[in-house]
Image 1 (cartoon, rainbow, N blue to C red):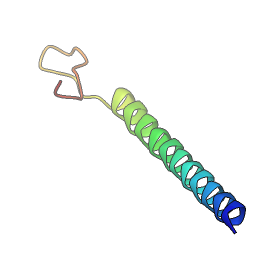
Image 2: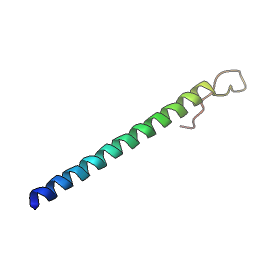
Image 3: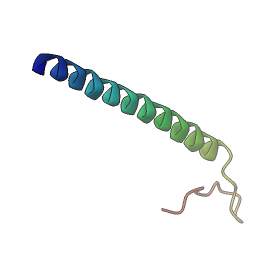
Image 4: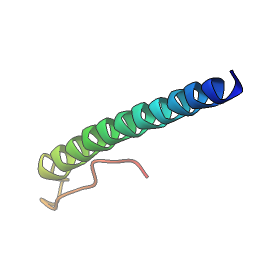
Length: 56
């Protein structure tokens, strides 16, 4: 009974880690797309130079 519980626990942990890694990859791709869009679509300041699109 104990080995079965250990196998089920291991499967649950690996499933959780896999889901978390997939979610992190999706978030990383979304952040990359937003960053690229901000880099391409940044506005010019009064002197005609390209300004920063972020505040930090």
